[in-house]
Image 1 (cartoon, rainbow, N blue to C red):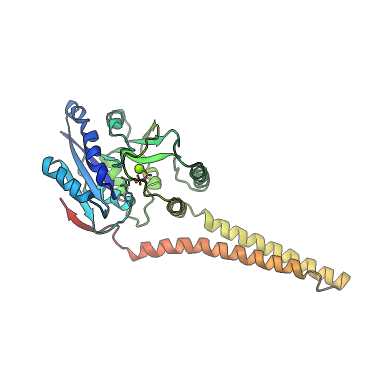
Image 2: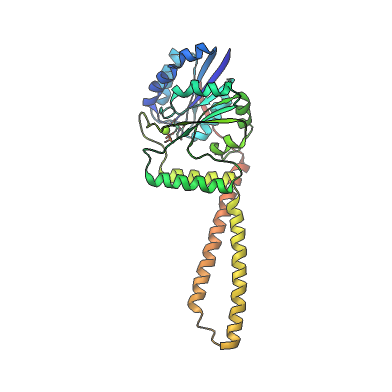
Length: 309
Ligand code: UDP
Ligand code: MG
């Protein structure tokens, strides 16, 4: 009998635990028909509400439900990683518990894995219901990162996906601390089937992503999967050196011909401001990489478990 592990990261999702479980269990006849057993791994990412209690109530009724509870909030990336480490399944699925990732898609995803695909991943067909400014920034981000990174990051791709064991092992072999899953899923390769579906609104509660949260996540993605900003900094530096060189020649020639050293003062101030601005920008780009390197070198664990059932 093949085992299907489903990983469900939860952070303050008290009201969603039971509705999600009920929706997931509608797949019961599909499991039976395909000779699949299942395990449901909730990863409680340091929730402050009754999430863990709600999960424990489920565990009391269904021995296939497990929970991994973090000592604090480590973020969804850490939760997915921990869940994958715990999952024993031949097939592993990652799903949000706010019902934005419909469990009813599971049979379809499973079907693709039987047809020679190694991973079936979902993608939002539209960004309906999202603030326009956020959509605009999201599109800019995907354009930018796909232009400068060798790893393809698919626009609208969700973390909701079903994978074969081999893919999960490959993902687990990437032990970096700064995890950007959208990049990691794509970096490991394998044959991927993309499944489009319409955006579904959250069942209960509200999203954990603020605009700035998303912005800094996008920055992390760029730093993790592209070194273009570092190259841009060097190129910019080189261009400004050329410009400065031309200016020196121009100034000397003008001094020799017209003999007026002070008339260029305002333009000089502009140039100093511009060049120092660019220097700060480049230093900032380098700082971003340095910070990430620093975190990797410290080699801290990606998560800390408080409780495991
Ligand atoms: N989540 C988590 N840790 C966090 C933030 C979110 O485990 O620090 C979980 C959350 O409970 C949900 C999923 O990740 O199941 C997606 O979060 P959310 O719905 O807020 O994101 P969105 O769907 O808006 O992208
Ligand atoms: Mg959601």
